[in-house]
Amino acid sequence: MAIGTERGYLKLRLIAISILLLHLGVRLVFKNPSPFADLILFNTVAFLAAAVAFSAPLFNDQLAVIALGWAFVIWGVGSSISTWNSFYAFQIWPAASEITYSLFYPLVLFALLRALTSRNKPSALELLDIVIITFGMSSLIASFFLKTAMLHFVGSQATVFLSILYPVGDVVLLAIAVVIVVLQVKVLRSFLFLLGIAIFTATDLIFLWKSATTGYAFASLIDDGWLLGLLIMAEALWHRGGEAQMSDRITSIAATIALIFSSTVLITAAVQRGFFPAFALIPAIITIALAFIRMGIALREARSASQDRELARIDELTGLANRRRFLAEIDALTPLDGTLLLMDLDGFKSVNDTLGHSVGDELLQHIAVRFSRVVPADALLARLGGDEFGVIVHGGAQAGLDIALALRSSLSYPFHIGTSSISVDVSIGRVINDGKADLMRRADIAMYQAKNSGGGVALWKSEELI
Image (cartoon, rainbow, N blue to C red):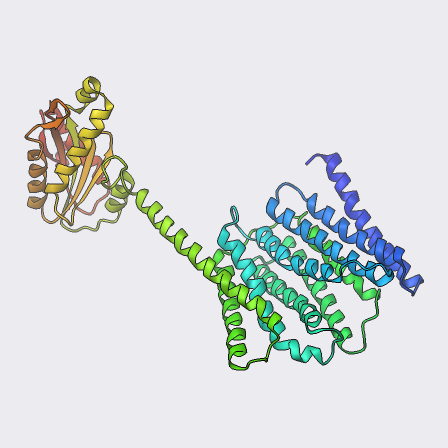
């Protein structure tokens, strides 16, 4: 980031703090709410917090920047609608502010996980887990506390239900932030996120407590806690931090717990009809539906990953094991009886040169079939590249020799490809497993000894390395 640009963004952060302090000063001097202080100044700070988040340095995960910035914009829109309706007779649809406040939490949760944990591109499962956590936790706590809250809050059941959803979202955010801070001790970015969420949560809880007891006074000083929390979270993006190795397991476990909670709500509603209003069951139903979708995606991804792992260990042309798998099997060998065979075809290059690579590829496929027929089930046959093959034979030295001779014999009669009759031979290097390293190097030496002697099978012996 250029120095001039960085200074400009520093001014933006200072302006946001200055307007917050100005708002506090105006409220201290003028006790009565006013459109200037509470509609313009207050909400300007929220939008400036979004600007601070959007302008965060490039070392950030850009999805975290976008999610946090839009979360603040959405919260600012909801706050502006709510404040407007408090001052003016012309009312903007009141439910709009409730909807925007509700959207704030999943966006911040997504930004929190992206900004503080080691992740690549977001997966469908990650996004679903976040939505499941949001709906699942909300369905349990909001549903079971709804009847109690109705005794203290003024408004319809739906209004009260939405009111107690917000602290639920706060608690979820706070819990995840605490877990990440524990994983990242002494990391300023994590601490700032935790501090911002804690202040925002405390403000929400005080608002809820006052609304239920002594009565909430519109445009009180405590409201600035929301703005301070937003600014501190935006500031966190301006500081580098260690990324906790918090895998998808954390969110998947939380999503599973949320699913259990939602199931509890629906079971309770089925056993005690009328215990919950119908609308309170909607988050639980959505959670379970999303859980089934997640299950389908997870199974498909697991199957795809399994296929990818298998393909990564298979030679595409012949269907045999590839070099990667062969070397892994050699590394896993223990000092037991066994033989490593390394094979190189004799006469294959002339086939490629005269008949073309397509015929050469078809010939390799036919050779792989013949080799497969003489290799026992417990042996590993692999194409190592080009016209080179390898076999790991389990058993004594004689078993290895027998297989080597059988492999060579399988090529004793020609291949018929199209109108061509093609004959090839094979040179085989044989080394008996003695538990030492460099089996491949020794087998390679033996193979070239066999090739230099006119083909056949050569056994590596220690004196041949001299």
